[in-house]
Image (cartoon, rainbow, N blue to C red):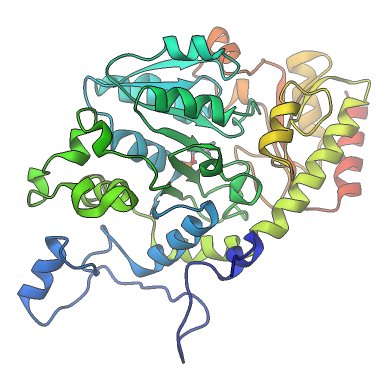
Length: 426
Ligand SMILES: *Cc1c(COP(=O)(O)O)cnc(C)c1O
């Protein structure tokens, strides 16, 4: 039976047997005990699967990762402590000092910083390309040492929609995988693997958790990228790992399991950015209603975007679901059911008007957070993106007057009334 996405949201990942707990148990244990050292040794050698220490694996986390894996249509997945950790692990798993990454310039500020500053310091360079670049411009960004292409399905906060097929084709023509951060649409609205992406990442902190309760991340592998066919580019997956008993991940675990096994056995072992089982439990509670919440987030986003676009005190509105939006065609293709509840716009009168508007809001609250059940809003140029200069801001698709409104799941009429009264004060 092929399940619909809503059923997987509710019941995926954990399927209890007879007389087992209906809800996912929280394994609040750092460690597992074994009767013999030999048995535990087999786990260390990755000869048997099983649990021994929560920094590497925990059953609660694995149940929740398995649900997200099913939602995305992948073959393996792992949770991480944050979206930042998920993106770093996904890229560092295949790129090392001396390597290069091609990334869309319209990405989350934290990810931009990770690539442009921190990973650069580690010897991994990035070339940023406009999400709207031509195939020729995209092709020209590659170098012989390029190891991955990175983009966001819907960019936070620029709301550019990634042409996943265009980026996937370029990546595959150069023998490297496409990594897509699918945080904003979630698999309810877009499954990037269906369009050619190879690895998907998430900040589960956003819609997946949905209640502002826990920071978390996830990496999902499609199992489709053929590492051995590009063995010279990915020695970490295709030659023995001397730090892990000489295992060759692509040989032992195949295309379905190699990427996540390496990221767990190597990166999680050494960096330790695990999600706590408590947070994984909370994340699963969010996932159970994800499909229901996403529909209301999208409905509110659409209604707010339409209201704003007809308002004389609003200079411009960006929402891919809005007719006439620069990304409307791509949204129709990749996000036919709706994208997310985030709307960006400029209050006429620029920076001071935007600040006055924000202060007058009563229901919508100023928070760095997005994708929460409660509506929140932010002025990126003076907060999350303040480390960027105006040129860098422009390249990331953010103007100084941009207000990002993340529509929650409140009643639509109340949200619009709040925005209307706040605009009156400007
Ligand atoms: C928030 C966010 C991140 C970072 O996630 P954290 O959970 O805050 O570490 C990465 N990518 C996107 C698209 C995000 O919105």
